[in-house]
Image (cartoon, rainbow, N blue to C red; front, side, top):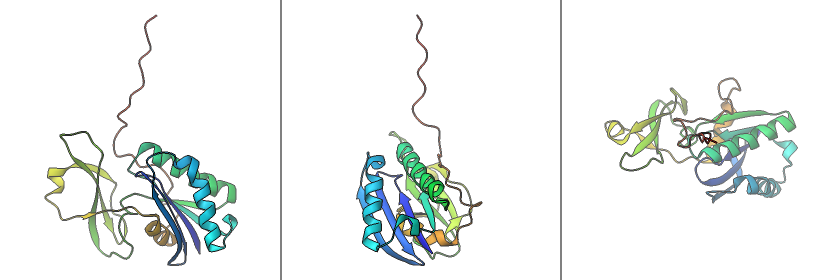
Length: 192
């Protein structure tokens, strides 16, 4: 099975191609903005290094967040568009699931720092069992997380690509994960 993984949720343009359990190519670069403009070229270059065509990909997986609102939307839309165009399944893994190296057994708590305004530091937290979700991602205060044993997550397309071969479409849809409402609010209409 040939899998293309996409991760744009935390200021990165991160892609990986796995054949079976082996990652055969990957590209990772920091990118706070502009993933929408660079993703197609980076994907094409990555495919060329493997000798695969886009039509050779059997399934797609995208990191769905939590993370940057715009980054999540770009990655999810791109992956869903590829799946629709090629008639392939598209799967979604949270940033926390994609942030834990494959092969962990048992239940574990993983965390990522949330970008919140000082003085309140918060973290995105999710319980995983055997690599996959045992609960939804939540936002916790640092003081609550300090009471638990947890592993810091580092979301990677390579880990999402390896895990994607075990996924079922109904259980891992490519839907954005937002732990809290956006900070931005619609403008009020002006009085005329």
